[in-house]
Length: 445
Image 1: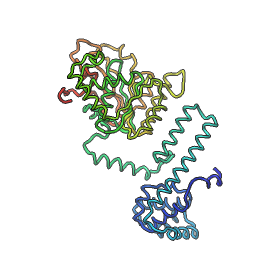
Image 2: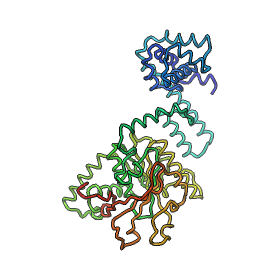
Image 3: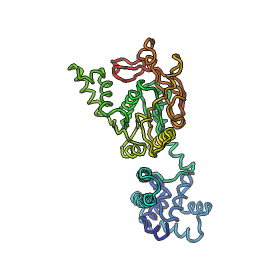
Image 4: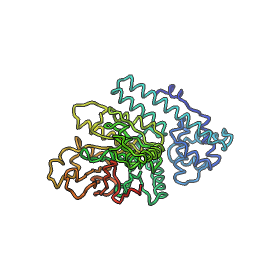
């Protein structure tokens, strides 16, 4: 960008000078200013250098006044003996009072946001007119660029340790305040939570099984419980079942009514009353469904970015998804999808729970060894690499009608990037198409 075009970008010299002057006049303004602004918010290079110096000195708990700031700038090579000294002293003279520093800082931040919008618009326009990729790719990049601005994140990929430390300490402080509680969203299955620590933010969690094991049911259980206990919003993308079918399952589990009765409508008065109570309970929760069977990751991400207080994303299921780029190599396409799901979890900073089918390899093994393994993941080994947690569902009665483990399911934690692996035994409530802990009793609900 040439100098003339740059000067036309939104900025306020007076507001920038007033912020810096207030910080030099009254050191009590500094924490508030540093919590609201970053060096890149300043348009004038000299103002940016001064703010960056104050930022560094504050992080080191150093005394901050005009003299010490001049000394710091001199050691950092930002100092011109004549002009810098005069400019710094002039800042305090042009600042009427430190009392209105918050208003000055807000104006500086607003101008910085407008510059980012202008720069993003220019980049998006260039991508669109230069033919850089397919329309869906350009649209996703454009939404990502604008979303980053809205979230207040710098569009950069290199961070100094000092820039990362505040977020780390904030997370540690949160964990310390919630000591004894799960670090992630609860699944509602206590034994599973003991293994994986709940659904961790930015994690990709995979639940896989052969058809008929109950993947959709356990995903609904987890989504409902996460919303109920966190108060956040969960989005459930169903590429196989309709939203009406999913809500029917929720009603069955919530009202403790046999799912077959809901299919026929043959209900007693007591069951109708329980359905009404269950519907009232479900209505209070922010669980949203999307049953578009042709959706891809870019479209999911675009929809989720617009959701306030998003807590969880559920996808049912991976092999039904379409890639953003069409290819004859389905294995590569699934690998791209799984990678994009992990990126989505990281960008939106929420757990993504994705269901997956297993290959028929387990069916061909001996009768005593049909439990799934990581090698059974269908179509792509990349799924295993991208997922932070991989869990398998297995019910022995599916293969062996004479088994002693009737209505018993195993949740096999086969991969756990942040903890232990092992097998958890769950109760399969076939009549309600749901799962619970083994010690579940009807009256507990």
